[in-house]
Image 1 (cartoon, protein in one colour):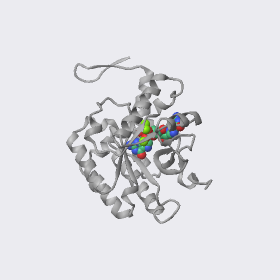
Image 2: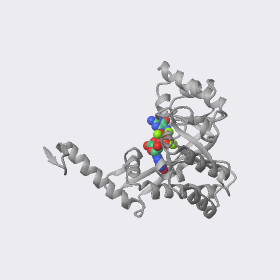
Image 3: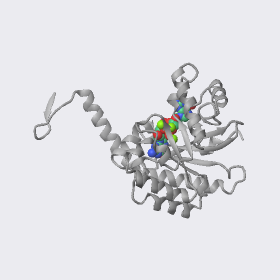
Image 4: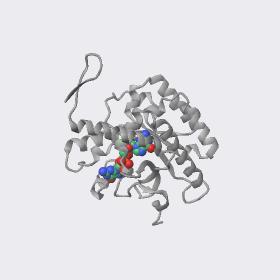
Length: 274
Ligand code: C2E
Ligand code: MG
Ligand code: MG
Ligand code: MG
């Protein structure tokens, strides 16, 4: 089936593609309503140190769709970035995380925990991003030193001076920055010099076959050395096995996140075993 899509452009599609376009459109329409309908939730996944002590959590967005059930962020975040819904959604995520930090700040057991929040490059580039974050901190009374913003290498496709300035302003408030999914982007290593980072997260794709794939092991080893020599905290993502943990610990990585320690969990069940 071929259709004329205006001008000289011929647009071909088959039934499968048509369904997925419709499917996308309907998902997108539903996402518009998700915020006001209270369908979004944050789950939290612990990060632990080499002694097994929980140092913080990462906030991970979940969407409970009334018909589809749980929709993966891998599906709806890219959609939300395209139509910029990620801006209000990301704001909601930040607000929820700040409210949680403020609650914890009054409880001795939890007061030292940090919350890491994923920030989309689209959201980060909003002219009022710094203002919004500062307003949220002021309103919620969350301790800024417990907030970690996770950015990705895709930020480096944006205007570097502006990105750096935005980070410096937030960092002056005590907020920390983590580079997420390290090694999966396209950018050069020079940004490690340019950007004021505190933490580097090794992507789970390198951890998965760490014990059997020599290339992955070499990449992880080198990344740890690089991070340590730059004075960055290095966090391994996707740690599922004790053997991976032992390898990482033996190679100088002392922060971990993964199913071995806990899955992303609603806040009320997070520390159940404590
Ligand atoms: P990410 O920030 O790299 O988050 C880590 C992902 O790895 C999460 O997937 C988590 O559930 C998963 N994970 C953790 N431990 C393990 C493990 O041991 N094994 C395996 N196989 N997976 C593990 P999730 O929750 O599906 O999120 C996917 C991505 O969606 C995130 O990757 C992040 O890029 C994005 N995302 C999630 N929440 C938000 C948000 O609030 N805002 C934005 N902008 N992006 C978000
Ligand atoms: Mg992340
Ligand atoms: Mg990651
Ligand atoms: Mg990821």
